[in-house]
Image (cartoon, rainbow, N blue to C red):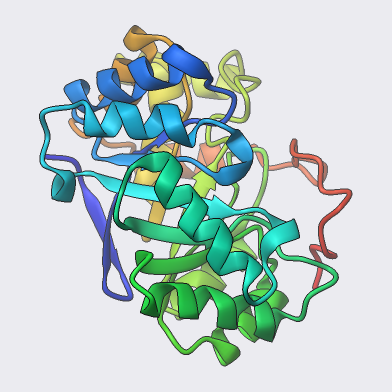
Length: 275
C-alpha cells in the first residue's frame, strides 16, 4: 500500500503518475503498468490531450475504480463560470468516468476574477463532477484569495517543485490551510540526476538519484509527487521509495541545492509569482 496524505477530507497517494506528454497507446500502457506496479494516483488534464487514453488505462485495469485516485484539470482559458463546468463534463466523457477524485484549475486566469474561477470550481464539485477540488500554479497570495472565496474545501495546490526550486512559501501556505502541495516536475526534468550531492546520497543509501529526490519529496509533510515516465522500469524505480529514509542531514543537503533561477517551467502567461 502506498503512503497517503490527508488534506481537507481527501486521501491522496503521495506518489502518483504524471501523464504530461504521454500520448496514444503509450499513455494507456503506462497507466496500466503503473497500476500493476502499485501506483494508485493518476494525474492528467484537458490540456494534455490524453484523457481518452488515460481513461482507457484506468477502466481496462482489474482494479476497482474506488482504489484509483484520478486527477484532471481545467485549462486557464476555460475557468469562467459555465465554461469550467462544461470543461469538467467534457473531461469526464473523455475519461469515461462518472466522477474524478480531484478537479483542479490548471493555471489561474488573468482575465477572470479568482472569485469567479473558484466559485465555478466549487459548483463543479457540488454537481458531482469531482469528489474534491483544488488549484494548480496559484502563488501564495492568490491561494489566500482562493481560500477566502471557496465554498468547498480546497485540498491542494499543484506547482512545480524540485530541489532546485525553493517552494517553502507556498508549502507553508498549503500546510497552514490543511492542503497538500502536489509537486510536478519533481525530479527537475532529469537535470538533477547527475548532481554530485544527489549522487553521493544515492550511493550511501544504495539507491538511484531519482529515488533519493522522490524520497526527499515524500518525507516532507503534506507533499505529493507526480513523476512522469514512459518506461516500465523507471515507473517501478520511481515507486520504490517507501522502504528507506533520508537522514535530516541528507534532507538538508538536498534542500540546499535550491537556486534563485531554479524554475524550469515557462511562466510567461502566469500571474506574478511574487503575489
